[in-house]
Image (cartoon, rainbow, N blue to C red; front, top):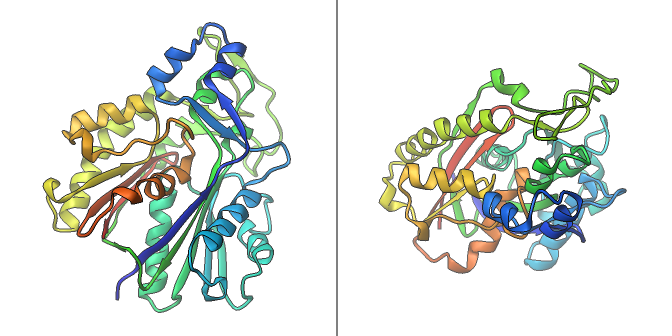
Length: 331
C-alpha cells in the first residue's frame, strides 16, 4: 500500500518585518547586507495574541477552501510545533474542535523543528500503510519569533512565522517514498530555548552580549550558527546520498531538490558541495524567511507549477534537535 501527498496550503501572518525595518533598528546592519547574507527580504511575524494553534487552524481552513477536500474524510490529525498553545492539552485537540472535524479521529502534537515536515510525512505514511487512517491532516505551525530577544538582529533576520496544511492520503499527486531519518541529541544545546519548561521553569534573567552586540539569553532563542553550519554540511550530503540509495535512484533521477530553507548562505554552500545544478535546486525564502517546519511544505506548494509527470522531488529537513530526515516524492 502507498501513501500520497494530495494537497498543500499554507498561511502567513499579516504583519511583515522587512529588511528596512531591521536596518532602522540596527543601522550597522544595512538592507543589502541582510539580503546578500541570508537571502531574505522580508518575513511574516505572528501577532501578539496569535498562536501556533491559530495559524494551524487558518492553514487547514485554506486547505479545505483551496482544494476539493471534504473535512469529514479526515480521520487523523497531527501537528508539528515547538510553540504549542498550552503545556496541555495538545494543540491538535483544540484545532480538531475549532475545525469541526469528526470526533472519532486520532490527534496528537509532536515537538520537532526544521526536520518536522519530513518526520510528519513518515508518520502519516505509516498510519495509512498500517490501515489506521485513510486521510491524515498534517499541520506544521511555528511562532519562533516570539522566542527571539528584541535586540537579536541575527535571528530576527532569519526567522519568520508560518503554518502549513497537507493532506496525506491513499491517492494524490505525489507518492511518498522511503525515508532516512537521524538524531543526535548531543547537539541539543546548539539551538535551544533553555527556560520555561520543566527542566528550568523559571526565567534565568541572564542576558549577556557578545563582542558583536548580540544578546545571549537562556530565556530566548539561542542558535550557535557556526556549529549548526558544521552539522549541516557534514550531515546533509550524506543524508541525500543515503536517501537516493534507499529509493534506488541516482542524482540524475531527481528533478527538484527541496531542502529546508535555512538561509541562502547555507543552501548555496550545500548546493555547490553536493554539485546540484541551480535549475534543480529550489529557493523560496526571500519573502517568508526561515519558517522552521513549514519551509518545505511552503516551497512544495509554491513549486507545483513546475511539476510534471514523471517527476522526482527530494525533500530534506535538518536542524534543531539535532535532527535530520529526507524522502522522495514521486509524481
